[in-house]
Length: 233
Image 1 (cartoon, rainbow, N blue to C red):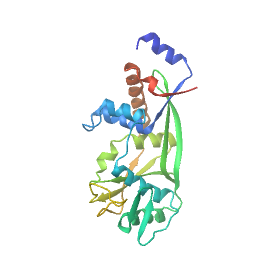
Image 2 (cartoon, one colour; image 1 turned 90 degrees about the horizontal axis):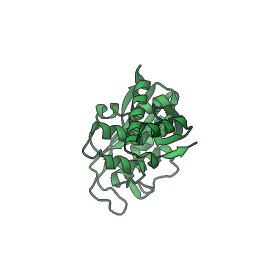
Image 3 (cartoon, helix red, strand yellow; image 1 turned 90 degrees about the vertical axis):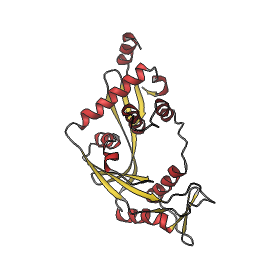
Image 4 (cartoon, helix red, strand yellow; image 1 turned 135 degrees about the vertical axis):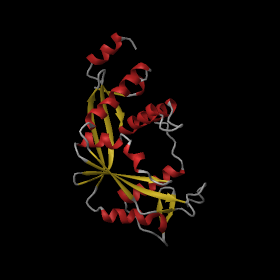
């Protein structure tokens, strides 16, 4: 994009809407986190083309037990979406909910970041707010590593957007997940007690968040992808 076009973007009051998830996906693409973090994968995330697999759906079921539990077990099983969960699969989610009775679930948030070239309206939804701390619930199908979560910008954005200082990742490790779901059951799978990782605000956090916003905006302009983002006036 030429300089004149960039100036036109700066002169407008248009905001470009982008989610925290997209910005984290961009960071993973930018740093080459894995072989799957490609430019096409980033574009698919921006355009909402993500197709959840069984593991993602199972993790979503765990979330729903914690966030919107309104069902009882029947004969030792619990029906959640497309899954029929055994007690070994839902027990830890129920215990977690009991341990956090005052948590406010699914809290939306947005904040405008002024980059060098345009305004980004960054949106997100925290899994839980507990007092002055943010909690994020994840299902992991391999050994959780603290470093994997610390490098993420998800927690940095949420601390910036909510103006808080403490973020927790609560990781539910799922073991022996089967290659196929049979009649709604993940036979043999079980869920361990969650492991919690704490992430704290640091002095340069706001600068780091704005740097990633600048990098994302420059990338979208240079690649002529701005048309993929929703404009907000």
